[in-house]
Image (cartoon, rainbow, N blue to C red; front, side):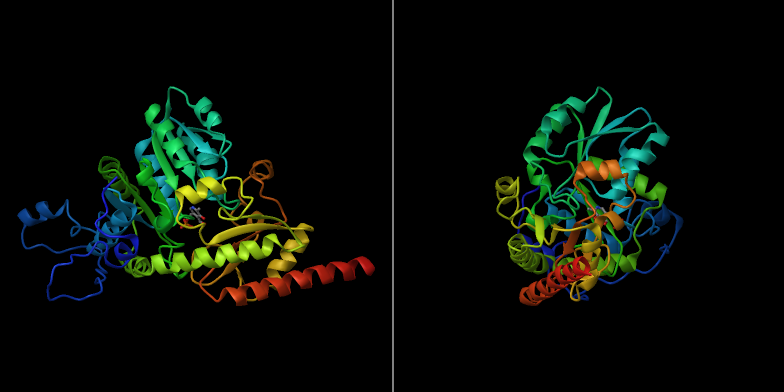
Length: 400
Ligand SMILES: Cc1ncc(COP(=O)(O)O)c(C=O)c1O
């Protein structure tokens, strides 16, 4: 973990920049080039290990974004990837080999669950899934060949919160690499490196980008691990395009203000839904009654911009409700300035088995909201209207 020179709000705007006075563009230029020319062959050799050799190896626009992210996470270094999934698959492929074993939480993003449970066995790497917050199960699942503890907090879509100190200590005790998907938290709400987690990943597509206009992945962590992952990123070609790096960097500048507003809006909406008679259950870390609320409030600066809730009705009612909303656009993904709504069994968790979904509590009635930065009063009015419409339709159907 590195010491922070500035607070997160300042790091988001100025991180990765040289603050010295100079004549230069204020915005980071986009080095939209695949390759870099050199004057002679000696310089060609020297360029190989820099960000001005060939863009699959690195690029100056990437370098600024990577430095900003490392500062925000309090990590030695960071790397950009073509997508969040590339930021999950590349480190695992870089650090593990045939015969190795992973212990992973059961509640992880559907794509990660598929990669760990269905794809890695083809390479002879096995994963044991354990109940997310049952830490004795994590410990019992560790074998002599276990190399990694794979984590996500808060989880998608049921917003469980993992005790970062506990899992980091467990990983250290057994000499495992702790690898966390911190997409839902963002470094504005929690910095897992400060709790001793080795590698922190994000789908940069979400809060870092912040405008639902790019696909991006991020990994931050210890220098030695990052160097190995960098080598594999070059081999696997899971690198980001420079224009996407520019958009990501622009998004990072407003990360702190967006997330702070999203924290406030989402807590208000969670409280509204929890009090509504047509809502059976609300999942949100800072909401009274959440099973890990105490831990969440200790570990996080805010509960984040995502919540999920179960409609008191059928899967069909949940789908009608999602369709009836106007200000929450029906679309997968999260973390942007525009509010979105999705039904996880149809989108983020469609690719995993019904049995696994049941264990995770991902039901047909579950609706996930990604809350944006609009007026919270308008968002609540939209939800109130849609909930009333669904219950009116149900009564009508019963009478008919
Ligand atoms: C928590 C989480 N991790 C990882 C991913 C994968 O990211 P990407 O879609 O950028 O590949 C997602 C995507 O929805 C996600 O929600």
